[in-house]
Image 1 (spheres, rainbow, N blue to C red):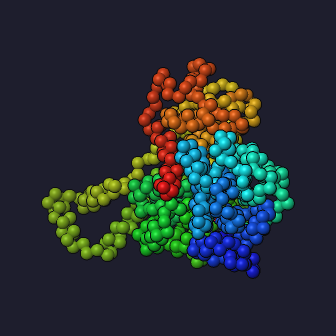
Image 2 (tube, protein in one colour):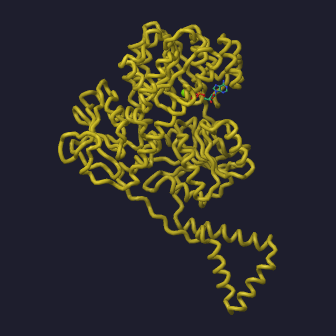
Image 3 (cartoon, helix red, strand yellow):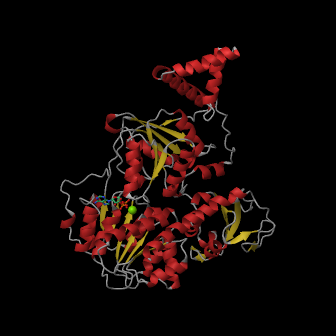
Length: 607
Ligand code: ADP
Ligand code: MG
């Protein structure tokens, strides 16, 4: 962590935490409280409201969980603590962290609830009387409305990553939930930034809060050469492959946003001949250490990592850091690129940035007070040059270091027998060895010169424009156009009149359906309804679930649009629509799998 430690950091044992909590913290191996923890724990233990501003990775979860858990009565069987988090991933992550901190509190149950998980499972789990609930706002509100989550006994409410909840369009839901909680509950609000609406919520609902702001200093890294590639028509994977071809790298770490992406990308690179491994928070400590160790020993050249998994990695061999997905903030950019250029060595940092993410590029330049130069992707000539050069090097090295007597005889015999030209023989041999990696690469087929809209969507990472608080891919036109290949247009009964913005729809659908926001297509807001393009062939149960999702106090009542008639159709009645290519079904299936997996995992753990 690059946060400055106050000169006299208290010890965890001096903060007044309950004994079982202190024990768990010590077992977690935390030595001293982080700055936000040092400042938050005492006031939260006293029952005060709190407004905390601190960057990602500064230990906010423990900052609220340790004191609030210390105040919980594990014998009581009603929800006492509620944490709202913007995404399913974060809800799970926070619930797991809380579970760790609460492991010595007998009888304490922590339950994550989030969209995309079956209501049935959640209802069953709610009946087990969890004292701590961690959930996404949409789903929590849903349970409150159904009467399956009662907050009458709630002691504390935490709004984690409030600015992100705002960006995802959940701030109204958050307010509604706040109103459903008892007046005397304690509220802690954490946010990396403090935009107006978040501040307004804080002012309205927090009582005389203690305000904590942890300043982070961004150190400059001048031994690292920084470049960016503007993501355009070329697919990011294709771009990365070309860069790998020509960059002179020893070991490399590639940052992506999600755990799933670490495995997917590592597999693809492995298939392209690079020894790669994912490193993510799902892997246990031993597996992570093994990957790091293999990289240190030169058995592995590429690690594909999430920010969390790569925190603090110190591998001198790492010559390159690639930001395949843009970091969430300038701090994490600095952390990421700090994995190279260690101990005074030179390092290279490459950032993929889409036009929509340009603002982050400027922010990084400002924060690091360094310019990041634009790079061009290597073309096939560059790649050919490079391969020929490597081939020549290999040749010289072989001539220098190998005993070639036997092979000289083989070639000599051949040449004499066939009266062949020695140059021709050598050329034929060169041809044979390069087959799997041609010296003259086939010209890359450029990705379709896509429409601008499509480009920025595909090339963006997980959360395209939400970071900028802008409604994504919004069109206002009243004309409804045919959906793009692989997509179907749906109608939802929530429109401008209801106060909906595109981001509300994206947030709700991404969370509830487990559809990656980048798979959500064009959104067109009308007065009393909207249309939205989603991956083709949505499973029926998912469809039914989406019908009931609430946005702006209205249920979506999603239906499939028939473009030839204004009347919406029921899901499944898509017989007159020509089936698109098989391939198009894939992303959807995966999104669905992703949605299912964490819930199953938790289920398995609980039972
Ligand atoms: P934030 O919510 O601020 O982004 P987290 O609460 O997720 O940060 O914590 C980031 C990481 O730091 C986690 O892996 C957590 O286990 C670790 N961590 C938190 N507090 C401490 C501490 N006092 N000492 C060591 N590690 C800590
Ligand atoms: Mg956090």
